Length: 334
Image 1 (cartoon, rainbow, N blue to C red):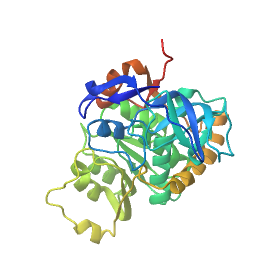
Image 2 (cartoon, rainbow, N blue to C red):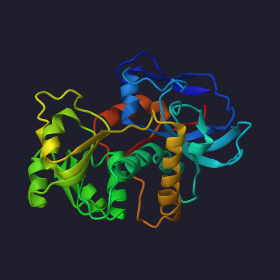
Image 3 (cartoon, helix red, strand yellow):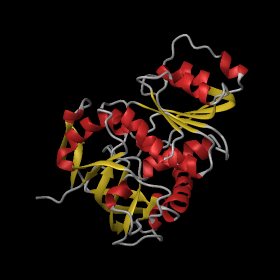
Image 4 (cartoon, helix red, strand yellow):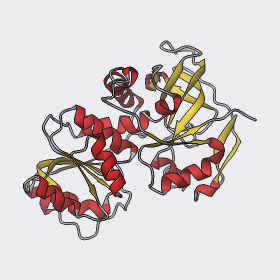
């Protein structure tokens, strides 16, 4: 089969379309003929050589796909050949064929395109996990979501709004993204390039701060996060895009404010844990809203590339221009 190969760890120019052995489903796996896959920040880090896939996973990039089931393992009971599906995997998505565990596979509703379906698993699983499994969001609580116009940020804004969060604050890097997030449901978007976002939040909340912070940034935002979080607040760390080492850390606020700081990831979790998320998202988002196209929750695809343009696609994601998911179509051999 054809697949996107990383020539050697490095920049986007190391990516090329090559040949790779077609996987064979066993046990409870299904083999999907891939229509689309979506990009994630972890793909960039893995391409650079800093994020190896979990043991036993495909070394190919890609953790979310949509497509049509080509064949199934001997113990598969929930799906059949020809089903249109989408789902999450630990690796191998940048290919003509990819393996999914049946417990992480979802039937694609007719109202969802293959492009939209591929954009759901990683971001919506991650956002739901952070807000409800980890932070235990309750109705009326105030939330701060960093990287508000990212795939996870967009999902988190909508999920928090539907759950009855009080005020939803987001940080973004442009005024256009501020408007986009506020139209999506954020109470207030803050351009971190022009405003001191922690001071804005304290002003908006009467110096109280927010109950929950969802952070992807790490080092550069640590002090401001400590300033903007409320008494008994929870901060969920999902990434550290600015770095993981914080100089001259003042841990005083953690004690004084009784702050809970918890890291969370998804790719390294057990299949059983991920399957719980799959059920939550499939029932509460896909069937309840996406499949009905009721407008309550929306999938935002920023741009669609053909996989022959995978180098340009990665460069585009790295440019931080996107508002929503970047999706790639797997085209037939010419």
